[in-house]
Image 1 (cartoon, rainbow over the protein chains, first blue to last red):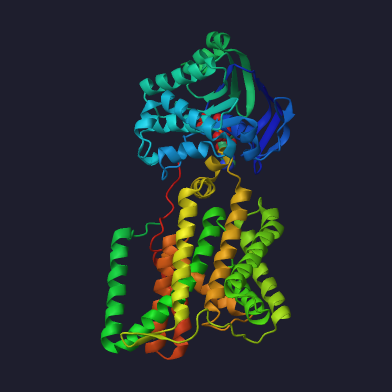
Image 2 (image 1 turned 180 degrees about the vertical axis):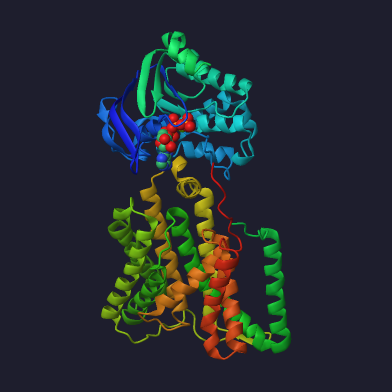
Length: 235
Length: 321
Ligand SMILES: Nc1ncnc2c1ncn2[C@@H]1O[C@H](COP(=O)(O)OP(=O)(O)OP(=O)(O)O)[C@@H](O)[C@H]1O
Ligand SMILES: [Mg+2]
């Protein structure tokens, strides 16, 4: 579904991605793990058009989207939950979700409304807090809002950047349970995580990134058994 | 560097007390003359408010300070002169056509000169707006010459008497239009999806991009609105001040000061800043020799930038996580 070929991205003179090649298969959960500064966020930002690649290609559903602007990419069916959630703090929960559906056409009103119901069913706590401004939510609730907001564009590929960051284990469990059920409904997921254990337990296939490169890849259960992965990422 | 924080509440209280004191003192000492000053100040202040809203809309969507903002007002006034006074179109039509032309010019300039610079630094775009101002002014001088022209008042010149002060009817048009513009701008940003998207983009550009909110569309819409607001201001004030090719420069500066005073990026701040500046200016002009009037805006601009750069109603930009 998504293919990244020899992708290189720079911040000025600093090269954050070095010839990264990977793929996310349709219907799978693919995970990318790696330490701080490995380039995971940069990779997702380049795919979603927030950062420009200097070399390499991003192919989505057999189409080259490497130099498309972010709004075209969202319309194409890729949605991203950014690192640190980045909800619109001064706006209400309802408005955040409404903005998630920003790219949907006027004629889709009914579908948008039913997607909203679906999101509120997925995260009932958001339904209780609809009129509250997003900045007043707890970290876990904000993460749910960020996921819900991303779902409102009705993506075919959902990318998440460290959804577990800063959350209590119980909240993490619940968010990953949701990801699992979305996966079962057929959504393709590309999951960036620092918490290698939960990521590999959830995913079908995994990549390990180190200093801007893919260091290791394989089926998630094999990576879980891998000596190096166990030593460095699973403690 | 630690800077002492003046809290928003204290500041607003101090401002309110200051306004009340100035207004009270003026009325007590000068009676009906004082009232006259306040009404004139509110009239010109409304115009500053409209221009300031233009600055704020573009700033909050793109972080650009549009130094050609005053020129939209100048163009509005000059076009009104040509269409209403010379071609003789009926007032409502002349008003709409003038606003429409300036709005199209604003949108066209954005596409032609600002859009191509979307990946450049904000400062280079700001420099381009200075160039735009010079270009618009020069073109206006070619078309209309350098003589000031008079636009007739919308509903005559017979002043209304109110507690001994006389108010020209045009003032009511100015107040009404400012109120209408403020309400429309507010509804746009508060109720429409496009407006909410632009607010989201102002608060968090990356997250907004991920929603599919295009920064290029935001910029175009902001310039279009700013041009319309500027044009409306220039048209409605033309019967009170003369219209001429250089009128936009001073108006732009005053509008910018009002926007900074109220808090750049906030529509209600623009109104507060504009009215405050207008009234202070008129009172100073009444009390002191006339040369001091133009200094008011500069003094306020410098004071605000030194003491509270985020303005009265603005929020200091906190750390974004
Ligand atoms: N805006 C930026 N300007 C300059 N360098 C940056 C910028 N953002 C990231 N980098 C650098 O690029 C490299 C990759 O960063 P990136 O954020 O992609 O890593 P990451 O794997 O997401 O890390 P983390 O797990 O901490 O989120 C790092 O060396 C980082 O310092
Ligand atoms: Mg990251």
